[in-house]
Length: 510
Image (cartoon, rainbow, N blue to C red; front, top):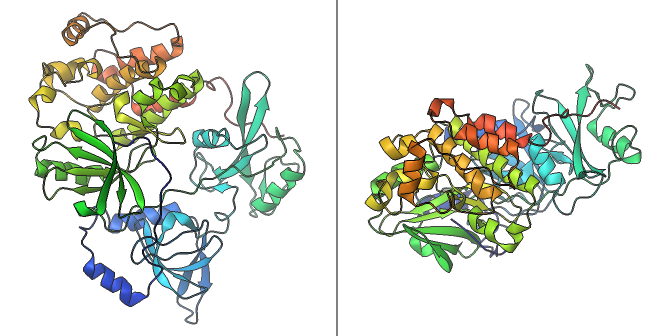
């Protein structure tokens, strides 16, 4: 839904406001409330943070929640509260991605992006990365800008309340790698990696291993670089006015409309998908969009808002600088990507699909053209759910010119049976696109020929550039019986550990 782009241009609309202004804002907004906010937002937020830093007020029975700013934030929406890194804020209300807060130094009140602040002293440390998986730790530490000895401490994936240390190392054979160490806890609350030496705090542990490696692969140098997170979408801006969007550059035209790089309210770069009038029922689209909005994951393109009061319908999503994975793989930059990164792309997509699988949802049109890539080379799944509501016989009938036969499972072609297992089949085809840098599946075959060959049990042959282990995964995805195909959860784990299956994930204690 989005391609080539530039940095966001920010034009501040206002600074933080008082309570009266906030109430006026709620009354004058011309936006339809996001259908996914509410009680569920509170639950998600409460689980996102560790123990609160609390300050007792004059009333002994009342406790105030204090947060520290991790980054600068310039107010760009009406009712926002701007702040600087290191500022302390009193949290007045937690709901969804925007919290109401008061800047302690000025007593100004307004809304703040919750992912720009930390309510825990540990979270405020530059080297602490909350909620980062082992695989994402490797991706971030191996990204450009980090050097040997760069490190992070993160939550343990396997032991709740424990931590892991991840360090960038150098290997003469395989180049730079990442080593992981379990940080164990003492009954009295202390920490250690090796029982030879213990520390009362994680800060002391970091300080020690910065001075000397003491059995680690490297002495710790700098914390892993942490780019400023994306700002949450504007509070309650779900059904937005068409006039709030400026279509800047047409990025492409698809079967059912166009994709534009656009600017929302003069300050936020977005992608806009314009749907051809008549391509879908507005009512069906809104039902599906309300469901799609609830699917929020790092490996899914975020749906921000819609324009649906009149046609053409606009779908507003986060902006992905590198465009579709298909176009990226065919580009000069994409052609330079080595096999380990191609496998990593596959693992990222499997991770997003595992989330869709867990939510009992179906994509129905999984292929490289519907995967988008951002400037950090993160792959995100786009257009999930749209295939179900398209009203175009050329797309919905298997004989139609737009029907993606070459990506579609036999049972979906023959009987219209779309399930998560037909998505698994499509994922196997997508793997061939990735390993071939964007080659069309079943080269040289027409759609009718593909159908005839599949009915006889034909499967694409392994390319010379495709490792046998990856081809084995493809063949698992192409099992004739849907129930015999693997889960996306399994595919994610196999692809994430493609090069480390024979190694211990964690280093022995030094």
